[in-house]
Length: 391
Image (tube, rainbow, N blue to C red):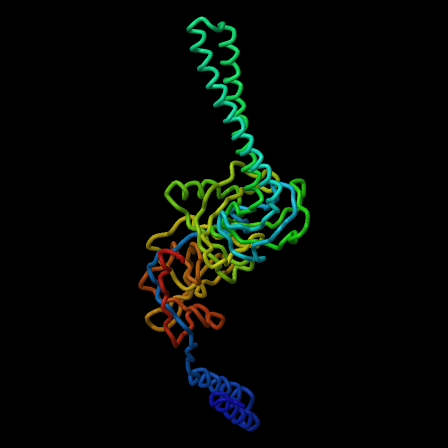
Protein backbone atom coordinates (compact mmCIF):
# COMPACT_ATOMS: atom_id res chain seq x y z
CA UNK A 1 0.00 0.00 0.00
CA UNK A 2 1.51 3.39 -0.98
CA UNK A 3 1.26 6.26 1.48
CA UNK A 4 0.05 9.70 0.44
CA UNK A 5 3.44 11.15 -0.53
CA UNK A 6 4.22 8.07 -2.56
CA UNK A 7 0.94 8.35 -4.45
CA UNK A 8 1.69 12.00 -5.26
CA UNK A 9 5.10 11.04 -6.57
CA UNK A 10 3.69 8.26 -8.77
CA UNK A 11 1.07 10.55 -10.35
CA UNK A 12 3.61 13.27 -11.04
CA UNK A 13 5.92 10.79 -12.67
CA UNK A 14 3.10 9.55 -14.84
CA UNK A 15 2.35 13.10 -16.09
CA UNK A 16 5.98 13.73 -16.79
CA UNK A 17 6.10 10.63 -18.99
CA UNK A 18 3.19 11.86 -21.04
CA UNK A 19 4.78 15.26 -21.47
CA UNK A 20 8.01 13.71 -22.47
CA UNK A 21 6.26 11.81 -25.26
CA UNK A 22 4.93 15.02 -26.76
CA UNK A 23 7.54 17.67 -25.95
CA UNK A 24 10.87 15.90 -25.46
CA UNK A 25 13.09 14.22 -22.92
CA UNK A 26 14.57 17.37 -21.32
CA UNK A 27 11.15 18.67 -20.35
CA UNK A 28 10.17 15.34 -18.83
CA UNK A 29 13.29 15.21 -16.66
CA UNK A 30 12.68 18.68 -15.31
CA UNK A 31 9.09 17.90 -14.33
CA UNK A 32 10.11 14.63 -12.65
CA UNK A 33 12.75 16.36 -10.54
CA UNK A 34 10.17 18.89 -9.45
CA UNK A 35 7.73 16.20 -8.43
CA UNK A 36 10.35 14.33 -6.32
CA UNK A 37 11.29 17.55 -4.57
CA UNK A 38 7.66 18.15 -3.80
CA UNK A 39 7.45 14.58 -2.42
CA UNK A 40 10.31 15.20 0.01
CA UNK A 41 8.79 18.40 1.29
CA UNK A 42 5.40 16.78 1.89
CA UNK A 43 6.82 13.83 4.01
CA UNK A 44 6.31 14.62 7.73
CA UNK A 45 8.99 14.15 10.48
CA UNK A 46 7.79 11.13 12.53
CA UNK A 47 8.76 11.13 16.26
CA UNK A 48 10.05 7.84 17.69
CA UNK A 49 8.27 6.76 20.92
CA UNK A 50 10.76 6.15 23.72
CA UNK A 51 10.87 5.84 27.47
CA UNK A 52 13.02 8.23 29.43
CA UNK A 53 14.27 8.85 32.95
CA UNK A 54 15.86 11.64 34.95
CA UNK A 55 19.13 10.84 36.77
CA UNK A 56 18.87 10.57 40.55
CA UNK A 57 21.53 11.16 43.18
CA UNK A 58 21.77 8.05 45.38
CA UNK A 59 24.16 5.82 47.36
CA UNK A 60 25.41 2.85 45.33
CA UNK A 61 26.94 -0.16 47.11
CA UNK A 62 30.02 -1.72 45.52
CA UNK A 63 30.16 -5.51 45.82
CA UNK A 64 32.76 -8.22 45.25
CA UNK A 65 31.38 -11.61 44.17
CA UNK A 66 32.97 -14.99 44.83
CA UNK A 67 31.97 -18.63 44.83
CA UNK A 68 31.56 -20.32 48.18
CA UNK A 69 30.30 -23.37 50.04
CA UNK A 70 28.15 -23.45 53.15
CA UNK A 71 29.84 -25.07 56.12
CA UNK A 72 28.27 -26.08 59.42
CA UNK A 73 29.49 -23.87 62.23
CA UNK A 74 30.28 -27.00 64.26
CA UNK A 75 29.98 -30.66 63.33
CA UNK A 76 30.29 -33.60 65.74
CA UNK A 77 29.99 -37.33 65.31
CA UNK A 78 28.35 -38.69 68.43
CA UNK A 79 30.21 -41.84 69.47
CA UNK A 80 30.09 -44.22 72.39
CA UNK A 81 32.67 -43.58 75.12
CA UNK A 82 32.00 -46.91 76.85
CA UNK A 83 31.28 -50.39 75.52
CA UNK A 84 27.90 -51.99 75.95
CA UNK A 85 24.50 -52.64 74.44
CA UNK A 86 22.70 -49.65 72.97
CA UNK A 87 19.60 -49.69 75.13
CA UNK A 88 17.60 -46.88 73.51
CA UNK A 89 17.82 -44.14 70.88
CA UNK A 90 16.12 -40.98 72.13
CA UNK A 91 16.13 -38.73 69.05
CA UNK A 92 14.36 -38.50 65.71
CA UNK A 93 16.36 -38.16 62.53
CA UNK A 94 16.47 -34.51 61.48
CA UNK A 95 15.52 -33.30 64.95
CA UNK A 96 16.81 -30.02 66.35
CA UNK A 97 18.59 -30.70 69.63
CA UNK A 98 20.14 -28.56 72.34
CA UNK A 99 23.46 -29.02 74.08
CA UNK A 100 23.02 -31.64 76.80
CA UNK A 101 19.92 -33.30 75.29
CA UNK A 102 19.85 -37.08 75.78
CA UNK A 103 20.39 -38.83 72.45
CA UNK A 104 20.93 -42.48 73.44
CA UNK A 105 21.36 -44.77 76.45
CA UNK A 106 23.92 -47.58 76.76
CA UNK A 107 23.13 -50.36 79.26
CA UNK A 108 24.29 -48.77 82.56
CA UNK A 109 24.11 -51.84 84.85
CA UNK A 110 27.74 -53.02 84.54
CA UNK A 111 28.99 -49.51 85.24
CA UNK A 112 26.57 -49.02 88.12
CA UNK A 113 28.01 -52.16 89.69
CA UNK A 114 31.52 -50.71 89.46
CA UNK A 115 30.30 -47.56 91.19
CA UNK A 116 28.74 -49.62 93.97
CA UNK A 117 31.99 -51.53 94.44
CA UNK A 118 33.90 -48.27 94.69
CA UNK A 119 31.49 -46.98 97.32
CA UNK A 120 31.86 -50.15 99.37
CA UNK A 121 35.66 -49.99 99.15
CA UNK A 122 35.60 -46.40 100.39
CA UNK A 123 33.46 -47.39 103.35
CA UNK A 124 35.81 -50.27 104.18
CA UNK A 125 38.91 -48.12 104.05
CA UNK A 126 37.27 -45.36 106.06
CA UNK A 127 36.57 -47.90 108.83
CA UNK A 128 40.16 -49.16 108.68
CA UNK A 129 41.46 -45.59 108.80
CA UNK A 130 39.32 -44.79 111.84
CA UNK A 131 40.65 -47.84 113.65
CA UNK A 132 44.25 -47.04 112.69
CA UNK A 133 43.88 -43.50 113.98
CA UNK A 134 42.49 -44.84 117.28
CA UNK A 135 45.50 -47.15 117.68
CA UNK A 136 47.84 -44.28 116.77
CA UNK A 137 46.39 -42.18 119.57
CA UNK A 138 46.77 -45.06 122.01
CA UNK A 139 50.42 -45.60 121.00
CA UNK A 140 51.13 -41.89 121.38
CA UNK A 141 49.93 -42.01 125.00
CA UNK A 142 51.84 -45.21 125.76
CA UNK A 143 55.00 -43.81 124.20
CA UNK A 144 54.70 -40.72 126.32
CA UNK A 145 54.50 -42.98 129.40
CA UNK A 146 57.47 -44.98 128.18
CA UNK A 147 55.46 -48.16 127.83
CA UNK A 148 55.94 -48.57 124.06
CA UNK A 149 58.86 -47.69 121.85
CA UNK A 150 59.20 -44.97 119.26
CA UNK A 151 59.44 -47.64 116.57
CA UNK A 152 55.93 -48.90 117.42
CA UNK A 153 54.57 -45.37 117.24
CA UNK A 154 56.20 -44.72 113.88
CA UNK A 155 54.87 -47.99 112.45
CA UNK A 156 51.35 -47.09 113.50
CA UNK A 157 51.73 -43.60 112.00
CA UNK A 158 52.83 -45.21 108.73
CA UNK A 159 49.75 -47.44 108.79
CA UNK A 160 47.50 -44.40 109.16
CA UNK A 161 49.26 -42.66 106.25
CA UNK A 162 48.86 -45.71 104.03
CA UNK A 163 45.14 -45.88 104.75
CA UNK A 164 44.75 -42.18 104.01
CA UNK A 165 46.42 -42.73 100.64
CA UNK A 166 44.29 -45.80 100.03
CA UNK A 167 41.17 -43.81 100.77
CA UNK A 168 42.23 -41.13 98.26
CA UNK A 169 42.77 -43.87 95.69
CA UNK A 170 39.32 -45.27 96.45
CA UNK A 171 37.74 -41.87 95.94
CA UNK A 172 39.55 -41.49 92.60
CA UNK A 173 38.27 -44.92 91.55
CA UNK A 174 34.78 -43.82 92.54
CA UNK A 175 35.08 -40.69 90.39
CA UNK A 176 36.28 -42.78 87.43
CA UNK A 177 33.39 -45.20 87.91
CA UNK A 178 30.94 -42.28 88.03
CA UNK A 179 32.39 -40.89 84.79
CA UNK A 180 32.05 -44.25 83.04
CA UNK A 181 28.50 -44.52 84.30
CA UNK A 182 27.70 -41.02 83.00
CA UNK A 183 28.97 -42.04 79.58
CA UNK A 184 26.10 -44.49 79.31
CA UNK A 185 23.89 -41.39 78.92
CA UNK A 186 24.90 -40.16 75.45
CA UNK A 187 24.15 -36.43 75.10
CA UNK A 188 24.64 -33.78 72.43
CA UNK A 189 27.72 -31.60 72.88
CA UNK A 190 26.29 -28.73 70.77
CA UNK A 191 23.06 -27.14 69.62
CA UNK A 192 22.33 -28.51 66.20
CA UNK A 193 20.39 -30.83 63.94
CA UNK A 194 20.68 -34.59 63.91
CA UNK A 195 21.35 -36.48 60.71
CA UNK A 196 20.57 -40.04 59.70
CA UNK A 197 20.79 -42.59 62.56
CA UNK A 198 23.90 -44.72 62.11
CA UNK A 199 23.03 -47.57 64.50
CA UNK A 200 19.84 -49.02 65.93
CA UNK A 201 18.91 -49.77 69.52
CA UNK A 202 19.79 -53.30 70.67
CA UNK A 203 23.15 -53.41 68.90
CA UNK A 204 26.39 -53.91 70.78
CA UNK A 205 28.36 -50.68 70.64
CA UNK A 206 32.05 -50.13 71.31
CA UNK A 207 34.35 -47.17 71.66
CA UNK A 208 36.39 -48.40 68.70
CA UNK A 209 33.43 -48.18 66.29
CA UNK A 210 34.24 -45.65 63.54
CA UNK A 211 30.71 -44.78 62.50
CA UNK A 212 29.26 -43.52 65.73
CA UNK A 213 25.60 -43.09 66.59
CA UNK A 214 24.65 -39.91 64.68
CA UNK A 215 26.19 -36.75 63.25
CA UNK A 216 24.99 -33.44 64.70
CA UNK A 217 25.61 -30.23 62.74
CA UNK A 218 25.20 -26.71 64.03
CA UNK A 219 23.30 -24.71 61.41
CA UNK A 220 22.35 -21.66 63.51
CA UNK A 221 24.63 -19.80 63.12
CA UNK A 222 26.27 -21.17 60.01
CA UNK A 223 29.33 -20.16 57.97
CA UNK A 224 30.28 -19.81 54.31
CA UNK A 225 33.81 -20.35 53.03
CA UNK A 226 34.32 -18.48 49.76
CA UNK A 227 37.13 -17.22 47.53
CA UNK A 228 38.06 -13.85 46.10
CA UNK A 229 40.88 -12.71 43.84
CA UNK A 230 44.11 -11.89 45.59
CA UNK A 231 43.90 -8.42 44.00
CA UNK A 232 40.91 -7.74 46.28
CA UNK A 233 42.89 -8.34 49.48
CA UNK A 234 43.73 -4.69 50.14
CA UNK A 235 40.16 -3.47 49.63
CA UNK A 236 38.69 -6.22 51.83
CA UNK A 237 41.18 -5.54 54.61
CA UNK A 238 40.40 -1.84 54.38
CA UNK A 239 36.68 -2.58 54.68
CA UNK A 240 37.27 -4.78 57.75
CA UNK A 241 39.27 -2.07 59.46
CA UNK A 242 36.30 0.30 59.18
CA UNK A 243 33.90 -2.07 60.94
CA UNK A 244 31.61 -5.04 60.24
CA UNK A 245 31.48 -5.93 56.55
CA UNK A 246 28.11 -6.99 55.16
CA UNK A 247 27.91 -10.10 53.00
CA UNK A 248 24.99 -11.56 51.08
CA UNK A 249 24.59 -15.22 50.19
CA UNK A 250 22.93 -15.78 46.81
CA UNK A 251 21.96 -18.98 45.05
CA UNK A 252 24.68 -20.32 42.75
CA UNK A 253 22.94 -18.76 39.73
CA UNK A 254 22.57 -15.41 41.58
CA UNK A 255 18.80 -15.45 41.07
CA UNK A 256 17.76 -15.77 44.73
CA UNK A 257 18.94 -13.96 47.85
CA UNK A 258 19.31 -16.52 50.63
CA UNK A 259 20.65 -14.72 53.69
CA UNK A 260 22.59 -11.72 54.98
CA UNK A 261 25.57 -11.96 57.33
CA UNK A 262 28.95 -10.48 58.20
CA UNK A 263 32.53 -11.20 57.20
CA UNK A 264 34.39 -13.06 59.98
CA UNK A 265 37.96 -13.33 58.77
CA UNK A 266 40.41 -13.53 55.89
CA UNK A 267 42.47 -16.71 55.72
CA UNK A 268 46.12 -16.33 56.71
CA UNK A 269 47.53 -17.22 53.29
CA UNK A 270 46.80 -16.91 49.57
CA UNK A 271 46.50 -20.00 47.41
CA UNK A 272 49.38 -19.56 44.97
CA UNK A 273 48.06 -22.19 42.57
CA UNK A 274 44.83 -20.29 41.93
CA UNK A 275 45.75 -16.74 42.98
CA UNK A 276 42.78 -16.56 45.33
CA UNK A 277 42.23 -15.91 49.01
CA UNK A 278 39.69 -17.60 51.24
CA UNK A 279 37.31 -15.70 53.48
CA UNK A 280 34.87 -16.93 56.12
CA UNK A 281 31.49 -15.33 56.74
CA UNK A 282 28.92 -15.93 59.44
CA UNK A 283 25.12 -16.04 59.03
CA UNK A 284 22.50 -16.39 61.77
CA UNK A 285 20.43 -18.54 59.39
CA UNK A 286 17.29 -18.37 61.51
CA UNK A 287 15.16 -19.55 58.58
CA UNK A 288 17.56 -22.39 57.61
CA UNK A 289 17.93 -20.93 54.12
CA UNK A 290 21.58 -22.08 54.11
CA UNK A 291 22.43 -25.78 54.37
CA UNK A 292 25.80 -27.43 54.96
CA UNK A 293 27.48 -28.39 51.69
CA UNK A 294 25.38 -25.98 49.61
CA UNK A 295 27.14 -23.99 46.86
CA UNK A 296 26.41 -20.26 46.88
CA UNK A 297 27.61 -16.99 45.45
CA UNK A 298 28.90 -14.72 48.20
CA UNK A 299 28.51 -10.99 47.62
CA UNK A 300 30.69 -8.81 49.83
CA UNK A 301 29.97 -5.12 50.22
CA UNK A 302 33.37 -3.53 49.66
CA UNK A 303 32.26 0.09 49.99
CA UNK A 304 29.38 2.48 49.27
CA UNK A 305 29.60 5.33 46.77
CA UNK A 306 27.84 8.22 48.49
CA UNK A 307 25.82 10.71 46.45
CA UNK A 308 26.39 9.10 43.07
CA UNK A 309 24.49 10.19 39.97
CA UNK A 310 22.51 7.12 38.86
CA UNK A 311 20.42 6.15 35.84
CA UNK A 312 18.63 2.92 34.95
CA UNK A 313 21.22 0.51 33.62
CA UNK A 314 19.03 0.04 30.52
CA UNK A 315 19.99 3.57 29.46
CA UNK A 316 23.62 2.57 28.95
CA UNK A 317 24.73 1.69 25.43
CA UNK A 318 28.17 0.50 24.40
CA UNK A 319 29.87 1.42 21.15
CA UNK A 320 33.30 1.22 19.61
CA UNK A 321 34.45 4.27 21.59
CA UNK A 322 32.97 3.18 24.92
CA UNK A 323 29.72 3.77 26.78
CA UNK A 324 27.16 6.37 25.80
CA UNK A 325 23.54 7.36 26.42
CA UNK A 326 20.92 9.16 24.37
CA UNK A 327 20.08 12.52 25.94
CA UNK A 328 16.77 14.20 25.07
CA UNK A 329 17.24 17.83 23.99
CA UNK A 330 14.70 20.64 24.66
CA UNK A 331 13.54 20.42 21.02
CA UNK A 332 12.64 16.69 21.52
CA UNK A 333 15.60 15.46 19.51
CA UNK A 334 18.29 13.21 20.94
CA UNK A 335 22.04 13.56 21.14
CA UNK A 336 24.65 10.88 21.74
CA UNK A 337 26.47 11.60 25.01
CA UNK A 338 29.65 9.77 25.98
CA UNK A 339 29.59 8.83 29.69
CA UNK A 340 31.85 7.14 32.22
CA UNK A 341 29.89 4.46 34.10
CA UNK A 342 30.66 3.28 37.61
CA UNK A 343 29.30 0.21 39.43
CA UNK A 344 25.98 -1.25 38.28
CA UNK A 345 23.73 -2.69 40.99
CA UNK A 346 20.03 -3.64 41.16
CA UNK A 347 19.32 -2.18 37.72
CA UNK A 348 20.97 1.13 38.54
CA UNK A 349 24.21 2.40 37.04
CA UNK A 350 26.39 5.02 38.67
CA UNK A 351 27.63 7.66 36.20
CA UNK A 352 30.92 9.24 37.19
CA UNK A 353 31.29 11.57 34.21
CA UNK A 354 29.57 12.97 31.13
CA UNK A 355 26.06 13.47 32.54
CA UNK A 356 24.28 16.11 34.61
CA UNK A 357 21.37 15.73 37.01
CA UNK A 358 19.27 18.02 34.78
CA UNK A 359 19.62 15.74 31.73
CA UNK A 360 16.97 13.30 30.53
CA UNK A 361 18.14 9.95 29.14
CA UNK A 362 16.40 7.38 26.97
CA UNK A 363 15.91 4.02 28.68
CA UNK A 364 13.94 2.11 26.02
CA UNK A 365 13.70 2.37 22.24
CA UNK A 366 17.37 3.21 21.55
CA UNK A 367 17.61 0.78 18.62
CA UNK A 368 15.62 3.21 16.44
CA UNK A 369 17.65 6.28 17.40
CA UNK A 370 20.61 8.14 15.99
CA UNK A 371 22.00 11.64 16.43
CA UNK A 372 19.23 14.18 15.88
CA UNK A 373 16.30 11.74 15.84
CA UNK A 374 13.05 13.32 17.03
CA UNK A 375 11.46 11.42 19.92
CA UNK A 376 8.14 11.31 21.73
CA UNK A 377 8.66 10.30 25.40
CA UNK A 378 5.78 8.04 26.34
CA UNK A 379 6.69 7.29 29.95
CA UNK A 380 9.05 8.67 32.55
CA UNK A 381 10.73 6.07 34.73
CA UNK A 382 11.82 6.91 38.24
CA UNK A 383 15.16 5.73 39.53
CA UNK A 384 14.78 4.63 43.14
CA UNK A 385 17.75 5.13 45.42
CA UNK A 386 19.08 1.82 46.76
CA UNK A 387 18.55 1.22 50.48
CA UNK A 388 21.43 1.95 52.80
CA UNK A 389 21.41 -1.66 54.01
CA UNK A 390 20.35 -4.80 52.19
CA UNK A 391 18.30 -7.03 54.46
